Image (spheres, rainbow, N blue to C red):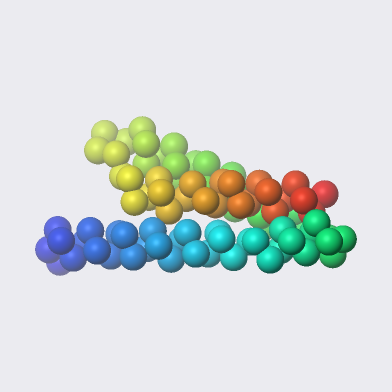
Length: 85
């Protein structure tokens, strides 16, 4: 695999990860409308994303696709978890 192909796959993965975490929006809306769901899964997802963002930022060669892929997971995961409580 060339470096260009690896970069394309990395950004594709970033896009798909962002879409995955944006999919929490209907759950958040449902929670706010009184249809409470479990807070455990989005909270664990947010913690997982925090770890990956830290890893991507603090490794010798920063991995920005990894960071950008997981930032929405922190935001939407925490919002989904807190609205479910």
